[in-house]
Length: 250
Length: 283
Ligand SMILES: Nc1ncnc2c1ncn2[C@@H]1O[C@H](COP(=O)(O)OP(=O)(O)OP(=O)(O)O)[C@@H](O)[C@H]1O
Ligand SMILES: [Mg+2]
Image 1: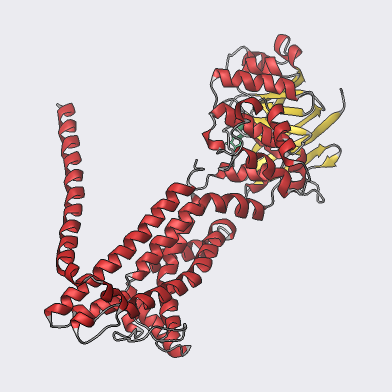
Image 2: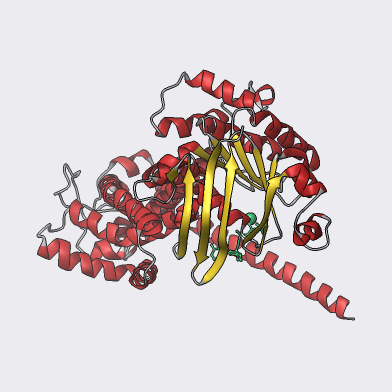
């Protein structure tokens, strides 16, 4: 359980002149749920989006230091960003299903990447793993946009799972959902960690404490503390961590 | 008191909008009423199946109808692929540089140009320089110039209205740019693009000035057999009838307008239908 899947060494990320991530180093363990917490604007999304190179579309961004996935440099000259995104999937803050049927939402990713599957089986498997199958099995060819927000978010998770990724990144996956839909996603994350490594950003302390094995606390672009979730929440080493998790700022 | 003022303003604004809307509809109604009153007696099977004639009761718009069909089909054939691919390039691939902004502004300017200028351009380039004479090709190419900027702008709007989150979702699944653009963005924008295409081609059906300039004939007693034949179109035929002194030809012109309006109405209806049907998957 202690094999590392993503490793950052003195990772720095600049937007123009603004240093949003100020030289952070950490190791993300395979098969665990890592929660990333910290006040708004501290660089959580920036770090997360660097893992699957979703930052590439920002024109004035600059990234230095080391960042590796299974030992390969993510920003190395030989790395193909489209290929790394097959292994590192992402679920966004707002559910963003394609304006197509539920079925097509799931098969599109594997199809364009040239994967060969029994597509009906793949759809069922992905939807089952995302705990959505029973609700949608009779309407697979209806528009994904007719689903509720929570269902849409689980569809987005199913779509990511269908790619058989090794890592799933989630950027505040519950922030657009009501408490009940949130609880379902949290349960789902507990299920998914059996198969996938998960890194999730959250603003919700309780959620981080409930669902994660490891927690990273970012503050103003620096990684203040990173460690076992229980220890970090019950016995933080840093004063700033303690202040943040007890709600004294943020 | 401030509250009352606001309320009065609100009511006045509401009634102002209402009156303008109904006023516009009323004027349209009066116009259509006059046209129908004048033209209805001239509508008959012969009117559709006869060639134009010096004798009003024998005159019809067979050749104009056929000409319009030829010209519009060729216009659509030229302008749809060109316009749609231009808008895809401008929205998705063009570098965000200063000269691109400049091109963009000029496309908007072109869309607002008086159509007669396109007629002069068509005359100089297609009729004279390329020696296409007064052919359907010359007419279709001229109308293409006219419609192109409108289609480009409408399609750009449709593409731009596809949310960024759809593109993010595509890339996050390991898609290449062309896959995101052609398999997600363009299909999502398709209803908007189609509507723009139909509405702007229907505008071209009603265009008269540029075709008169390039020399569309007003008396054509045969059906065009190919794109190099000379032609006439509905509005030119109508214009010709309306400019004659005899009262009966004015009736024919009104009947011609009725046919033209019906065609435009059907095309607009199709546009609305496509919008409704294909926006099943909307955001
Ligand atoms: N596209 C961008 N261009 C320029 N600066 C950016 C961009 N995206 C983020 N930033 C800046 O980088 C810093 C970190 O932003 P980031 O989005 O990573 O924060 P965050 O921790 O995810 O915040 P939140 O909790 O509000 O989502 C902020 O100061 C932000 O203003
Ligand atoms: Mg964020």
